Image (cartoon, rainbow, N blue to C red; front, side, top):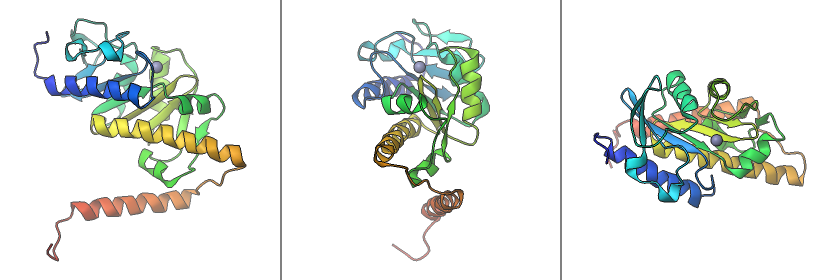
Length: 222
Ligand SMILES: [Zn+2]
């Protein structure tokens, strides 16, 4: 049994790991996810099938990678998660082995702006060059590919996304997989039209305006 106050995070991680399987973003124990809580990171264990995973299996590491708790070995991709926390304001990181993204990564250097929703990821999504799983090289490549983006594709491997919450990081992983699927469908019909930088900038500005609009108190009554 664990002795810390991260109970809510632990249960949420287990729940989202099961969604990963249900949504087809990974199989078995592939992929991994984490949540930052202060100067600690809660991360899924290495090699534990998601269907067998319990809250007590979640590992706790410091931002420097020091293991602080857990009965299992932390995910082999812990260096990649820590690199994202060091470089961004991420509070949660999700790494998938989702099929559309992996297929695209074997053929393309980038997922272009085929649909305006890609603005929610920061724009066209880069494909980081192949590097062995669990390596510091992969952590560095992911960090570089995430510059100005909240998601990146790992060549011949999978995807990584982050967010202010686990729900946001997970939704971005789902959006990325959907965008890769739409791109494949478009390419199967011919040469797709890609949104221009100006069109994407317009979408980004509109999204920002609408978000600010929601946050602003209404003056004109209900
Ligand atoms: Zn992986």
